[in-house]
Length: 212
Image (cartoon, rainbow, N blue to C red):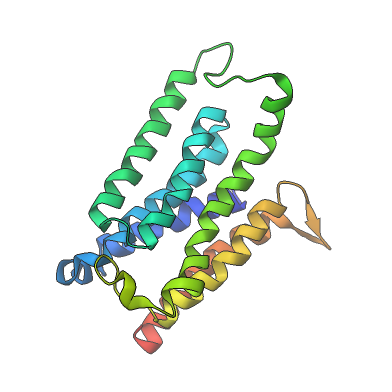
């Protein structure tokens, strides 16, 4: 299925990268602290791909990658370091996927009960990892941006605030669609996909109208 939250997250990551490699790249040239806008969308791409690869090894890498957002967004390291790590996780996941192809059993193959549990819940925890981006933004960086100024600029822009607020809902929808098919007449998968597309559109509208 094309319209699901995972594809929404994947497209969101790609669009985010295109935006920062294109029209917003001058901001990075002027201030390298914007470098997290390369590492985080690469992580979104990794997570979106992991849903489709359906291998425990690949989804474990996506899970770790998602939680590596935390040190990046509390300015534990620079944006360039974070980007290198994110690329490394994405590359490793792809390598593992091709290593898995043609095998009778997966590289990570625990006992049947744990295997079934991981198949069900790994992506759930991975989505929760992504939600830490918004948690850190609103609960930590919003009130005390100067503490992170070595590697991160202050971000109180409307577009960034809207994106982070909407990410909470996207994570809920992504988790929900794994267990609930419909909300009333609407398929949860499609709601998640449309919501992800709105996360591209609404911040861009804010940037064009309000300039931030």
